[in-house]
Length: 100
Length: 167
Image 1: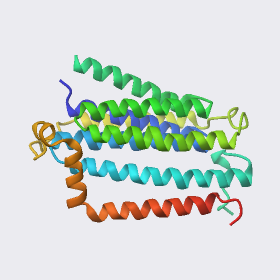
Image 2: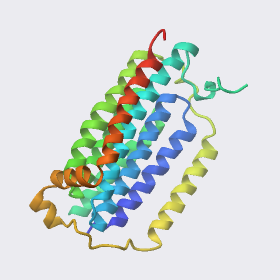
Image 3: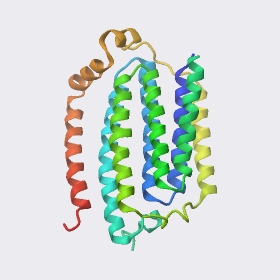
Image 4: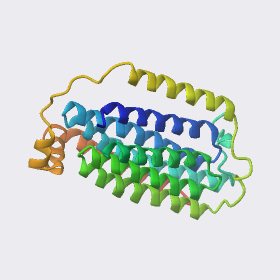
């Protein structure tokens, strides 16, 4: 019998792995992909709890999370392209143009 | 039987998520990320949410991953950042393991309450998941839905302006 706890544990593990990636990787695109892993872990929590509670609201939240993730992917990748064009690198340590 | 299938898919999801973090080549990370998304779609089907599984595959594994792989191919940065690819692994490992321990401890410390809402398995089988989503989206959440449309429009315009060669 699969309980909601199984899904919540899996979601916690996936979120921690995504955090590890965001904190360790240098390539901006890989950091971006790790953020997607974290968003998906949260989506799994939303849907598991939505089914557990018997309410549709959690799944509507997932719908909006997906919308925001799509918008974020479009704008974020455009920023990465513009950055690469200027600096010829994708190292997140070089993302310091706003610092003086 | 079902629990064995759950553990199998969960194992694949966790291992492929780990390889997203570990792989040196961004293309390999992207392909592992697609595997993670497909495993999550399987979970959505197991949770009786087939519409969510469909848009998980169409939007995430389809649109967003194609966009990411397209940018990786377009920039063609080769070996420039693959060599020196991590920093602060020990500290980040400690932080993420702590995060995982706290989260799993919180999950295990009690049972989720509040069952018995209106949406049951019988209702989903009877009405259909897509129709239930549609009812909730277009009756209760019309304004957020419209705002999401405006957000996507602004994102498209912003992406075009940011990525353009000469503004």
